[in-house]
Length: 167
Image (cartoon, rainbow, N blue to C red; front, top):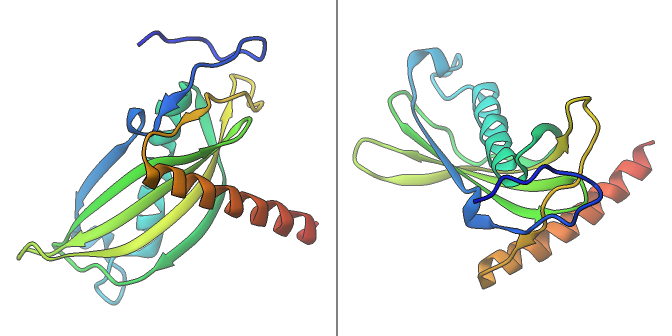
């Protein structure tokens, strides 16, 4: 795949969701536990943010920065020695921003898996001076991707409305 420099004068070729899909796997160690012997929420947030950044960088080929984290809910705890499986996919692209969905699953030693977190992050592509730059459009290939894209547009509208109300 040709690496094209991201410029404002050129229409960027689209990229598929599959082009930037990323997974990360961790085994929960004592250093990741909180006082209740459950996964420390801040550690999970760190992993989610890093995974979302990798997805975004793979999509746009640029440095990125996190602009917002939406819908970060801890649905269930994860415990010492669980395997944490995180998967990240791009759900939406705007002009300079991308929405990334990260699902986190905990797997116990017997193989039982349970969704413990789903988060949506807004990541902005930036140039070497920290200024936002255009990102490639998203190529939608499946009905699931289309449904996620449409839901992402609604989340974007809600974020914009919320931002205007708070300032």
